Image (cartoon, rainbow, N blue to C red; front, side, top):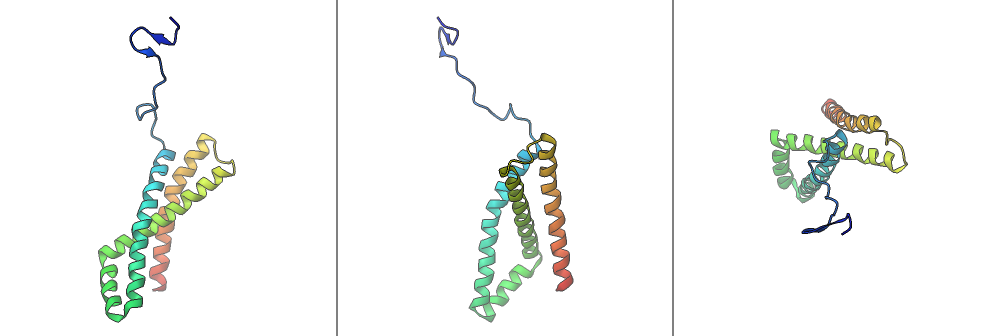
Length: 135
């Protein structure tokens, strides 16, 4: 009998990787967030399209949409949409850096992942401050 076989079970096969093997990292978290923000952008873009359609449909439809989107909940959703858009864009730029073969050092990967989160939050706040300043 060879070393790759047992009496009862047959050939010994490698185990598939599972979550107990992996250590949760910033890069993993940002990968998950990139997927979540991508999905959120679909929903937010539908809301943006609904708002644009209301503007094209006349004064009554536009005023109804403005009432809905201009309230606290509407602005909160728009703030989240802004963050998701910026976070997803910065994540895409991070992947572009990897596509050109740079940024694979573990320390650099972690810094880029942390920077993705920090920069997306900071840029979202800057966009909203500018938006309210020019309003």
